[in-house]
Image (cartoon, rainbow, N blue to C red; front, side):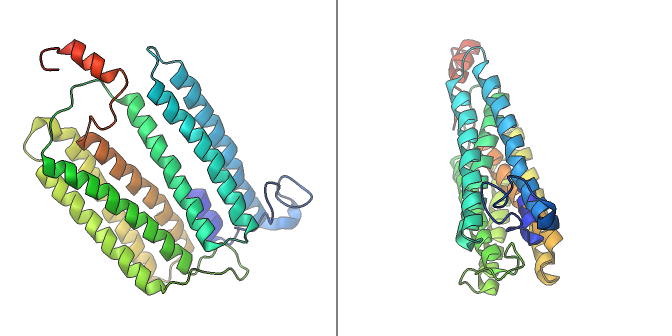
Length: 286
């Protein structure tokens, strides 16, 4: 996601003018395409590394004893999302960086990040009986995820309306007033932080919520840092380096929101064998 941001802010989105080959004569970049071709092709090459990593995850999931079908399905979902997002990236090139297609390309990356975070959580979770959480905490955790998702979606409108089109050529922009969507984006960011603080306050006082409180506190730190980066870039003429960092920050914020949801609601995505293991540990409580 960060390298995709680098492609955008360096104007290298059409550094490889076609897809799936880099140009009409070569699958890879050529000296004639210059630095922009190298940057764009390097971002494409990362897809191969992603597929290797996802393939490793699929094999590891299949080798689990006892077999966990949910973990295997999550690992396979990463593979198909990598492929789908590569195609979306290709379409963005073929449509000369249509801003709506570029936004969809980014949201597909968020979808991949979602399944990756769920796989990570599922692979590391310890079977246990979920502790009952206050209803207000459950509602706030879901509200936090929804608000964070809305924040990211509106962020794509800010980028699609802003100056970094992805290429030095004239690329159409979204028909939004940049200042207006930026204000909406800022309001949603503030609401996200307020929701997180409110959630942290509702989780105080019980030993069973210590992990969830740490997750929420980490989320608040990342969200505040992300907000500061966004504020600075708006006040300093939207420098490309800060835009790329802001894109990376959006990935971290989304991971944080998902992990908050999973730890506030530990029974939300129960492990296939987790309930049985928990029952075996304490059948009376189960």
